Length: 190
Image (tube, rainbow, N blue to C red):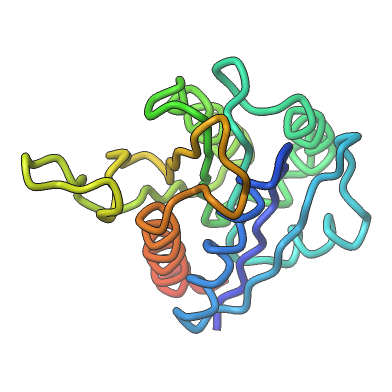
């Protein structure tokens, strides 16, 4: 059984809701998955660092703020340089997810940040593996309506509460995304 560690920052609760859907999808796929929240000061408890070290896969999550990750996530990423120096996460499966208020909102820049971080750690990146819902018949709650291949993207209106957003289609996309990460991880026994 694969172990997935989901490390994320959420400023208002929307990204936390997305992280919980990723977690649920990983569990449904038969993986052991744990959630690790980066706090409002950009810190992660020591036991979370240990869980990341022990995991077969790491999934990064952050809201997209001003075209990139939150400063709290960036603080975590900078702190991971200690792990990078010893290449402790080398050959782990890695992926990522993000949420922002607009349909695009420069979310791809956030995913590229995650990809770069994963490559610096010598990880193996996994995308969504999901076709976009981009036909005239597509509805907002269809799977992968936001249309991302490089990682999971979701959208929550700026005036929505975490109870209102991300919408059900994005949460279902999160579960399918996590299922794919879990299945790919199982193909790379550590």
